[in-house]
Amino acid sequence: MTKKSAFTKQVNGKHYKNMAVQPTEYIVKNKIPWLEANAIKYISRHAMKGGKVDLEKALHYIEMAIEEYYG
Image 1 (cartoon, rainbow, N blue to C red):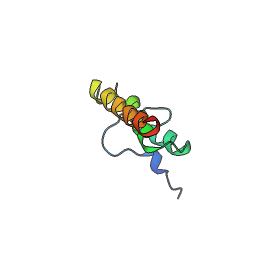
Image 2: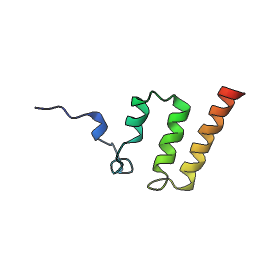
Image 3: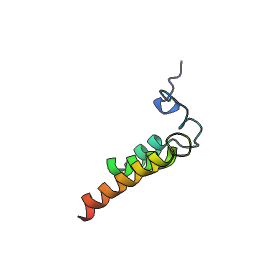
Image 4: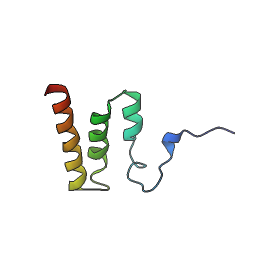
């Protein structure tokens, strides 16, 4: 029996399943830090899930990253 990768499964919803590369897989493979990763996640899903609120969340993570890295 071949074990399936956890990246092929999504718990609740379908907003990542239809993407060619799921945000989490991209983030992990590229070793992207937490703040940037969350911005990527929310930007990637806004059209399929949270709309404007997800874009606002992404912006919030970007603002936190700017503050963290550049004061």
